[in-house]
Length: 189
Image 1 (cartoon, rainbow, N blue to C red):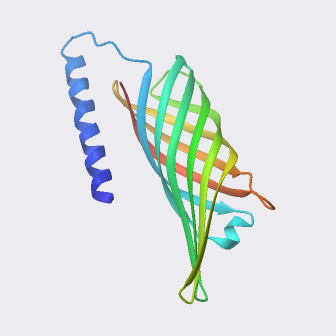
Image 2: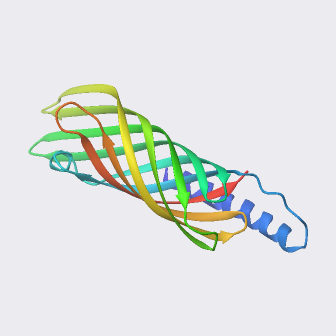
């Protein structure tokens, strides 16, 4: 998976530098209000969820549509995995976020801070294994994700985004919560 991710980032980098070189030759390039990107990150469990699992990892694909230069609609689909092995018990929790959101950007310079929120569905699965026996369960839950971050324009056709997300998945009993720290590259279509 690491090789595939590295290859994808490398190909996107080559494409973006080609667009940048084309723009530098004096050609007028029209940019789309649509951006696509990929983000990788760490998930730090909080609350009771932090007692059950260790730090996890995740990958998100992000669609962005600029309503205005400072206001974006976003769509996110990803995969997050958390595990813990203790006393012969293996516990795994995976979630697939399928969210829609909004971002507001402050400024139009090279470094642009933003705030936002996402909400919709989380497809969760959990598995517990002990002494060769295992039990698993899956469910779909609603969630809410406030976020803060920055966009850094590397070139006219590429930006780096760093995002801190506080994911709240509304589950029975205690909510499942974690802090996501993500970084990724985004490109206009």
